[in-house]
Image (cartoon, rainbow, N blue to C red; front, side):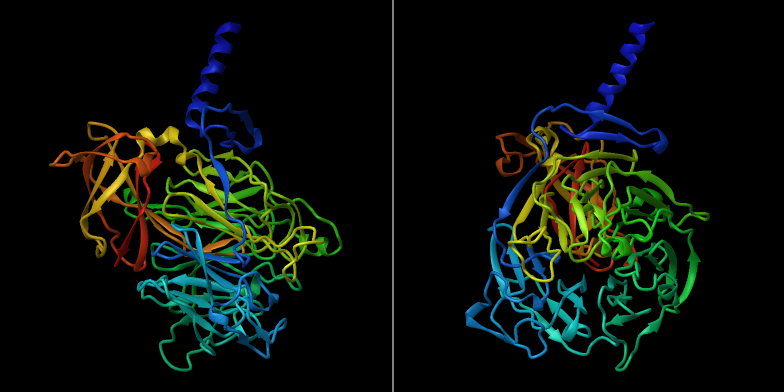
Length: 573
């Protein structure tokens, strides 16, 4: 009997080991009260970290990926001198600047991810703690900030010579710590901000259009602390806007200002700035008719944490996540326990539809020098199995004002971290960080190359809503696979732990068939080896409407046996 029992335990352990990325720790939390920790031994190459840029010149408080494969990053204009000068000897003259009235230093950069080269950009007004959203034409709309930037709307494209264009007095009220969400009609709704219990739209429908009262933000404001800044906003499949602030959430009809639904509160403590958890809208699938939408929120800080850190008391951050099906008739939060506590973590949707939780601290809150114990190890979360896995750690603290974005090859660009009131490289507890890292998740390891797809061609790079298009792709197999999934991802604008406008759709598609030409090719760049690839064709259907996928540029990824291809840009709508 003992031998049979031992053999059964071995089978259970081995089955979990085979399902896991190598060299990870698995937390099975189907029953959070009975957490099971398993140490998994290395099976070969694993996830990895590398410093991509040793000195970017600017600390990446804000980060976003353009469809031209350029990453735009910026901090604030009144940090004083950065470590990269403006181009052509230009100097910004601003009598309102708090640091330098004549400033010859850049506070925004563009990183070309192919060449690893950096170009200085010229932002003129203060972008401190601002927000943004990409529009259909491939331009970023960027709103608010502090000081002379509070009512400014800025735009920038991703072209080789594009630079910031600024429109002063374009916001009805100053927006500092607000959130942006692109809407189906290509307006951007700008929600909240410090002492702003309202929302407004960009661009304006008419001259003089003002802000619209939003009492929910006043109701979720903790006096003297707030805990409702950078509210989490997600566009629901029914066309309304999910808004979460502090511990509460509603569904807002932004056309009328009416609250459509009020959801139960999320227990544990506040989740928004400065308690700073994070949130994602989990992937929405054609398999459910795009009718089911679920929000996930992780981390934050217990009540009273901000007051405590001011007194030098650094309580543990929250270690819980909540999931809420916002389309359910009777939604309730389902709570899971993370492997460690985390505040100021970023949540990203990986090409595989898994969730990566990265950056942040284990104690304290957001704010200058208000956090302790950096959380160096990212955590991988599988929404299907409700399981967390601790991945390989970085060695660089990424605390307040750090960011992360998913790249087209599936890697993660990580930057920022400046929990100081200026650029501090010596003497600070946690120095200003100018290094840019690349985190390579487990699926980029060469051990996955024998099932990695490669997209070869797309019949339409700009499919309209509901349009059927074909994708030619290659695999290192001779026969067509039973199924390949197609994930459509909207890259976000990331700042202060929230990746605004991030969303993923799992598209409808047919079972792949061998391409009529049945060509075999060799793909060294994709798999790192001379592996023969056979071409196949799948028929994919674009999202049905702009509510599910506001018009713009998206990353399309083929998924074979859980392994993603490098992504292709396509324009939807």
